Amino acid sequence: MKKLIFILFSIILLGCNKNSIENPGEFAPTDVFVKIKGYYTIDKVFDFINTFDHDVENIHSQVYTSNLPSDSLQYVLDYLNDKPYTNDGNAWFVNGYLHHQTNVITIFPRLFNIKKREYQNDWLESMEILELNEQTEGETSGCIIYFHVPAGEEIEWKNRFEQYEFVEWVELNNYTDIEPN
Image 1: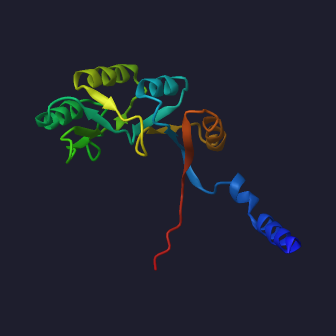
Image 2: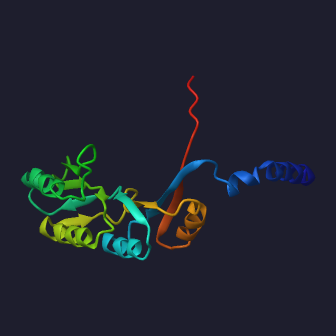
């Protein structure tokens, strides 16, 4: 019986396509997505992205709550959407809602062109003005950084980013075939 299990296990291992692990297939040139763990706050994220010469298309998937009164939701949204780095002027704007049980303002920003230190400083100041608290615990904590690395170096940078202890995962912008039924 042990021999049969060993043979089956060997077949499974040998059947794995090693090339699929080493070669992720086709992906968009320069695009690398880095998911940062929730405990690593936005000020540290800014320090992290500033250590590289890579363009950052945006930082997204963050969740913030505000200590302002619940009737301030629209004020918070208007204040943030007035910034040149919190929306693309077309489709992506800061959005949010009042939590149905707590009536706490909850917002979901996407930060564009955030490699500019003036934008980073302004975001940190806006957090103070709007009494924003970054969600640092739970399944939805953390953020995703959309980096542009040099073309042809995507896999190298993916591997480098994975070495940081505060990085949860790293993905390339893979192309996928869709087969309709």
